[in-house]
Each structure stands twice: as structure tokens, then as C-alpha cells.
Length: 403
Ligand SMILES: Cc1cc2nc3c(=O)[nH]c(=O)nc-3n(C[C@H](O)[C@H](O)[C@H](O)COP(=O)(O)OP(=O)(O)OC[C@H]3O[C@@H](n4cnc5c(N)ncnc54)[C@H](O)[C@@H]3O)c2cc1C
Image (cartoon, rainbow, N blue to C red; front, top):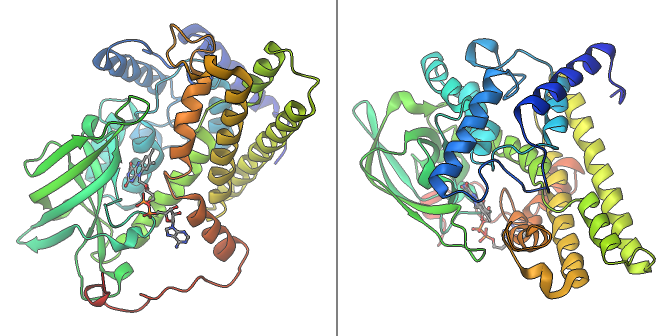
């Protein structure tokens, strides 16, 4: 990748920067979003309004086809928009799952009619999506899902439970991974659907988190009817479809965690007058090296994608490094700032709650989208080509696996 902008790219960057200056407010810290501090409904409305404005300007999904609401742009242009938007207040992440994972999956496997009806509203923030893969007994081993979909006429009847579904309580649609054939080995008996979250037969129960928020939910299905035309991919090919979603997930989580960063840590250390302490210098150096590594890794991925590649297992590296780094930095910042760092909330915390929020969020980021251990397994086996871990259920029909 050439790190200097070409004249065309420089012109595009100037255009994006000028648009952002005219349409958005500068960020006060890494996790500063439009509508922060407003009641939930108004915050969501502010996020939707921002998303619609960005989509209308052609900056919401630069590479997507124009007829679906994108801008037919290049990956480098997409990167330029992301880089420039980092300095401005944008929406709080409610559209990330739809835009980063569900809609790319729908575009890859959905019918022309569904693409035409669902992609544009998702892009404009009118429809929100969630991803329903994890279950109480199927997280890391997501191919072990028990939620059952049985065919009946031209629809499927779904019964079961999902958990940790981010944004389910706000969502209009969701991707659903279900077991359609328990008599074959676990990866072969899965099918992917998308469902209308307001359908009868779906109950969403939000989960209360330790940071006071409630970003994810349990979702229960009782005789939910899903039309067969909402199936994504072939019957029994759900694992292949799920891998498409998961690779997009690791790529977007890896780049968009957006917690305490090097600049914020530098300001904290400087503010505390501790720039000459070896331990502080060590942490700062680690943070800088890791952030620069992540940036270059992201550029390399984009180069591969711009040559026609798809997000591959190496995307796991970015998520693993960034989540671990965020937690290390938060622990150091907590030591540095003492009790003051524990205060959350824009209005009362002197650092606008960045340290406290990074601390509470970073633990979950090491789990979401694949735990550290699972990502290490993927990197070992599929990037480095090391021997596979023992898989005792391999080749055994799902309904014969002891549980
Ligand atoms: C913030 C957040 C948001 C989430 N959002 C969503 C969402 O929107 N949709 C969704 O479907 N899911 C979501 N999840 C769920 C997430 O995908 C799972 O939590 C994750 O995959 C881990 O599964 P688990 O919690 O069942 O843990 P388990 O799989 O039970 O793992 C428990 C421990 O065992 C370790 N372990 C398991 N298997 C192995 C192995 N083979 N080798 C080594 N160690 C192993 C794990 O690393 C972990 O430490 C979210 C989770 C979080 C934290």
C-alpha cells in the first residue's frame, strides 16, 4: 500500500474533511457520540439523524453499490472516511452490527428483492439489525447451537434461545443461526435466516450490565414462523454463511473498538506530571507500537481486499491485539488517576469517564466476537498452519454428541 494520498485521494480527503467540519462537531474524547447525555429515545433519534445525513452524502458505506445506497467508491476512500470521521462525533455504534456484519451477509446471500428492500433503510439508520448466533451452551463453539428450525409448508418453525444479542431490544431485523438437521455432524446441520424482530414468537429480555448499561439481551423463540424466502444460503450451509458474518465482525471490531488510545494516555500521563517515569514510558511505548502495528495491519487488509480478497482469519489478530491493549491501558490509567478514574459520566468525570468506561468495556471486548483463546486458536491453525486442537465431536452426528 502507498501511504501517501494520490492527488485524487487527497482531493477526496479534503472533500470529506470539509463535509465533516460543516456537518459534525469535533470529538471531545474517544467515546464521544452524537446524542450523548440525552434520554435513550432521543439519543437513538440523534444517531439515526446522523446516519441518514452521512448516507445521503455518500459516506455511510462508500464501497457499496450506488443502487443499494452506497457510493460505488474504493476501499481507500472508505478508509479515508473512517480516518477523518474519527475526529468527529458520530453515532454510538447502534448501526455497526447491521452495516458491518448483517447487511454484508444479506448482500452476499440474500435475494435481489430482499437486498433492494433492506439494504438502503439499514444504511440510512431507519432499520437496525442484530446478530443472533450465541446461545447459553453455544458461544465459542457456536456450531453447537440448539435453536431448532423445522420446515412446515413454505416456512420454518423456530424454537429455542439466544443470548448476548447486542442491540436486540432496538432491532428491526436479525440474523438467526439455527439447527435444521441434528442427524448430521454439527457444522453440516445449520441454516441461516433473517427474521423480523417484531414477529409474534420472539421475546427480547434485556440484560443489565455492570457499567449500568443494557446493550444486549436474551432472545426467546416460541413457534416463531420464518418464511423460507428469508433463508440465506442453502439448507445446511449455515456454517459457511456464518463464517462470512464472523470475518466481517472481526474486521469491524478490530478497527472500531475506539476506547482509550495513545493520545488520551499521553495526555493523562502528562497531566499527572509522570512523563519521566520508566513505567509510564514503557506503557506509552507499548501503546504506540501496538496502535501503529494495528494501523499497518488494517492497511494491509485493505490492500488485500482491494485486490479482490475477502476478510480472512488474519482479521483475528487486530481484534486480539486491540482488546488486550485497551484493557492494559485502562489498568495503567486507573493506577495513574486513582479514585478519580472510577468516576463515569460526561458531566462529573474530569476525563469524561473515558478511563472508567474503557476499563468496564475492555473485559467484554476480549470476549465479544470470539474470545482471546479462540482467536489464538484461529491464528495458530489457519494463519500459522500449526496442528489443529483435538476436536472430539468431529464427524459425529450432532444428536449423538454427549451433552
Ligand atoms: C459485549 C458482547 C457483545 C456480544 N454480542 C453478541 C451478539 O450480538 N450476538 C451474538 O450472537 N453473540 C454476542 N456475544 C456473545 C459472544 O460471541 C460470546 O460471549 C463468545 O463467543 C464466547 O462465548 P461464551 O460466552 O459462551 O463463552 P464460552 O464459549 O463458554 O467460553 C468460556 C471460556 O472458555 C474458553 N474456551 C472455550 N472454548 C475453548 C477452546 N476450544 N480452547 C480454549 N479455550 C476455550 C473461552 O476462551 C472462555 O475463556 C457478545 C458478547 C459480548 C461480551
